[in-house]
Image 1: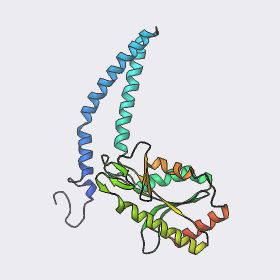
Image 2 (image 1 turned 60 degrees about the horizontal axis):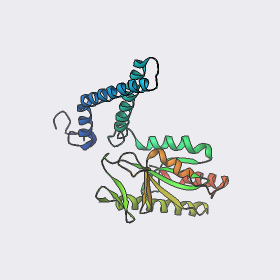
Image 3 (image 1 turned 180 degrees about the horizontal axis):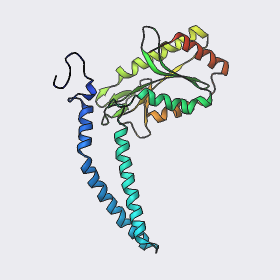
Image 4 (image 1 turned 60 degrees about the vertical axis):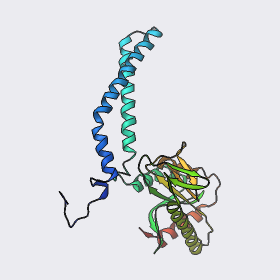
Length: 254
């Protein structure tokens, strides 16, 4: 193992043969190409700004050309960087559960929701977040796929590219049922838990979400919005407190 240790297993995401490693390599190598493209776009913006200033009889004509060129260049830089940053979880540079947990707390706590991170039923699968609030109960997990993986639903089936998504959906649906059964048994409150999966990378349909096989996959920034969309109040404050305390006591940290 050149440059490494025979006793320490390297992280596959940083090994020279991984898709993540190649993605970062090609991104760095394409920097000059992006800069040339940005300069061309800025030049077009400069000409357009000059043309608009002349068309409307504005003073300081060169200023508008430079201003529009700057806006075009900045927008192009932001789009390129944001596209690269969106793959950070897939590349192992950021933790999806940390991102989603922060978004959930920021949006839901002031609305009376409780968010518990990293929970599991002993001997069964774990989840990243358990959300309990007026609109009901949800489990939220995090996952990422390569940027070119199309996430879609056809005929009620979930697909990741050409692969069926049952192996992803079924464990989360089963875990939601197991969590609901445990909470009902311990509290006497009948709840239905909705499973959600925050997809940090991958190509989702327009709108940023897809639902199939009992599971909804959506962009992380849309998870809290989906939970808040449950307008009907199904749990009162006492039930929320009871469920949250029971979950904190009975579910071990994963």
